[in-house]
Length: 258
Image (cartoon, rainbow, N blue to C red):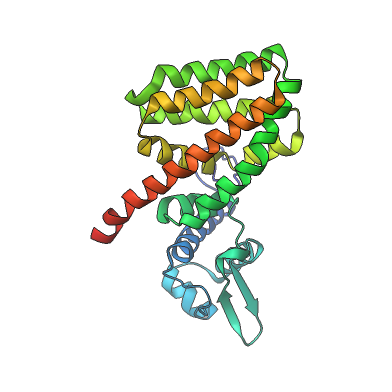
C-alpha cells in the first residue's frame, strides 16, 4: 500500500499505525489546500485555533500540526505566536507542488495561472527548440517525429490522445535541447502543461492549422535551422495563447450558471 506522501509495507495487507497517520495527513492536506485554492479559506484570513481545527476536521493535533508545517513550507500559511495562522497571498504559493497543482487545475480557471505558464513557455521553449535543432541526436529527432505522428493520428477525434501526444512533442523537444534546466522545467510542470493542452486543444478552431504549426517546428529542427526553430515555436505558443483566451472565455458562462 502507498500514499503520495509515503508508505510502509505490511505483512498481512493491513495498514500500520504510521501508514494510517500518513493517509489521514494527506487527506487533511488535500482538504485544506483545496479550501485555500478555492477561496473558501480566503487569503489574509486567520484560521481557527488548533483545538477548533482538530475538531472540525476530525484529526489529531499531531496530524494537524504536520499538515500546517507542510502548508507553511508551501508558502500557503504563516503561523505566529499569538497572531495565529494566516492564509498567505497566492504569489507566495508553490504551485509546482503536486497537491497544490492538482487543486489549482481542478478548482480554478484562474487566467493568471495559465498566463504565467505560457509566459514561462514563451521564454524557454523557443530556446529549447533552437538548441534541439543544433544538438538533437538521430534518436531524439525520431522521438519528436513520433510524437508529431501521434498528434496527426489523433487529430480532432480524441482530445485526450491529441493532448497526450502534444505533451510528448514538446517534452521531446525540450529533452533534445540537451539543457538539464529545461528538462527539469518540463518535468516539474508536466501536469500543468497537459491541463493547458487539454484546454487549448478543445478550443482550437482548426486542428489542421495546429498540425501545420507543429510541422513547422519539426521541419526546422530536422533541417538543423535553430533560428527557424525558435521562430516556429514562438508562433506555436502565440497560437496557444489565443486559444487559451477562447477556452477560458467559453468556460465563464458555465461557471456562472453553476
